[in-house]
Length: 197
Ligand code: GRF
Figure 1: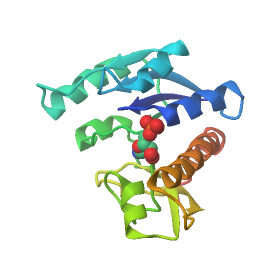
Figure 2: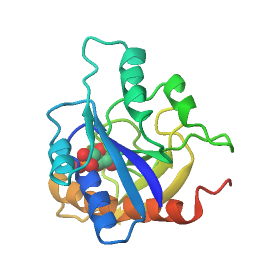
Figure 3: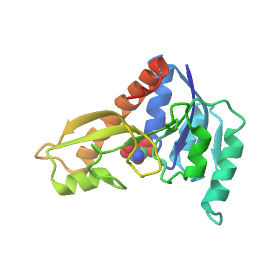
């Protein structure tokens, strides 16, 4: 069983998928706390409905270092195996990441990105891919390192774009892939850890 903190900024549909996977025993994990940098994030309501510990702190009026310091202070109450980013819209600084460095040298911080990296990094990746006109899109689960959307890839899953797709139907297909892929990858990590290669 892995102990995780889930970081969100908004809707929380991946958080919800993780919660459901744990409830269904498809994922052997415990969510120790849910962190949000937006007090109004819908994901916080989902977390609270499930009785999870939450910690919301906006970065407004703070430096990145001060904001991260507050989060670290909260996280220090728990014994965590991994940080799981699920739509967290802030970049984590190297100073933050070093607190989660593994013996093998990688950071124990996992992210889901809505494209087949290295294509379409950054924000609005479903829209980027849709507007580009890709025939095959996808989702990536990867480790975080100091470079945005550049860490070691743990898993990728493609999905098709159909001729009659709108951005909405395309995005919905991608989100369904995310909701099955993320818990499945986390379960692999719970069982086997992160492979060195
Ligand atoms: C997802 O598309 C995820 O891949 C990206 O941000 C979005 C978050 O959605 N990093 P949600 O908050 O999990 O619904």
